[in-house]
Amino acid sequence: MDGQNYLLPRDIPYIEYGRDEQLKREAISLSELLADLSTGDRPHPQSSVVILDVCRDNPLIPPGYKSASTARGLAGLPESEGIFVMYAAASNRTALDRLSPSDNAKYSVFTRTLLTLMGRTDLSVQELSNEVKDWVWKLAKSAGREQRPTYYDGIVGRFCLPGCVAKSDAAGFRENLSTSIRPALSKELTGKAGAPMVLIPAGEFWMGSPDGEGAKDEHPRHQISLDAFYMDKFEVTVARYAAFVGSTNRSTPERWDQVDSRKHGTLPVVGVDWHDAEAYCRWAGKRLPTEAEWEKAARGTDGRTYPWGNEQPTARLANFEKGYTLNPYDNALVPIDGSEASKSPYGLHHMAGNVWEWVADRHDENYYGKSPSRNPKGPSHGVYRVQRGGSWTNVPVLVRTASRIEASPTSRLDTYGFRCAQDVPN
Image (cartoon, rainbow, N blue to C red):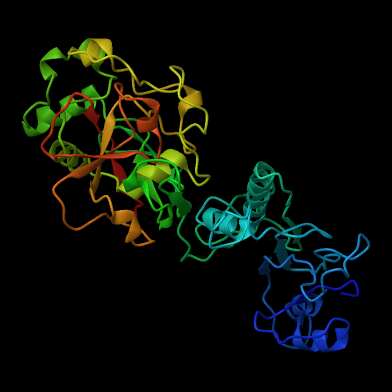
């Protein structure tokens, strides 16, 4: 309005169009708000970060009054020293509340992306802004829309969020971080048993299948928030499970008599029940992943159908739909390091096909309707446990990231395997 940006309270009273002065009295001037952070007599912070998802047209202009010449979205963006401002859209552009009429997400396109990426402890605020810009642009384009977040950086140097690691510049300068800030989490680590693990960052994702897709127990589709955790990059192998058996004298899995360690060591172990999988993970200083953790690690945050995207599975992307054999180690299973094209968004291999993977949760086909929205652990009661990912015998619908089956925790089929997860170290 008049070349300025104003923040309107949600409960602003009705104001007749044309009464601009009354509107200004009810609103907050963005320019004045930013100026208050850096000027005046009172003490001011050395650096301030402002994030604004407020890039909308003037909502008080009645239908029929807007024209091609009517100012849209943000006016010119104010600049202030020592202040970093992230905007949901570029100057003279508006931000999207929804991607489509059927989009029922709780937050706008910008905010839902921001909240997901805020869990990344490896990003400075500048790097976070660039990631948000790229993700929002891609999401909008996928729906035939357009939105490009932007930012003004009045802060000299790289500004670290809590948990972000400081970096040194060529002159040897190091950012002065509070000692209470935890060092950045490693993107990969090696577990006790020597298996590489990948960081799955904290944040939200959509769990389950949309209406019209999937089985009954994949509904309702719901938004889940998870803390950061680590997940095995690969399924547990024959070689690693053999070390566990040798160390603990645990009974061997089904089909173990077919194992030739010289040629089968890099294949996933099969014929293990839920108790075997849980005991191995505990022996390795880890745990079985929750069902929610498994699904996020498999599909990321963009709701993809398969770990690699929405393309139907092929032999290049997954080990699936093979005829049944009594000798899976020789005739069905493939090594744990699948093709680059088949990896999940976080770099995990064989999250679709090869072997069904045990998770920690009990099964309840109605659990999604009553699941907590943060770090769900599954039902507290129930006979059967959940498996995820599909196996070498299954059709495409069963190797989707949302597909889930129930199985007796004492069942040891030659399609059953697992991988482990681990909490982020304190």
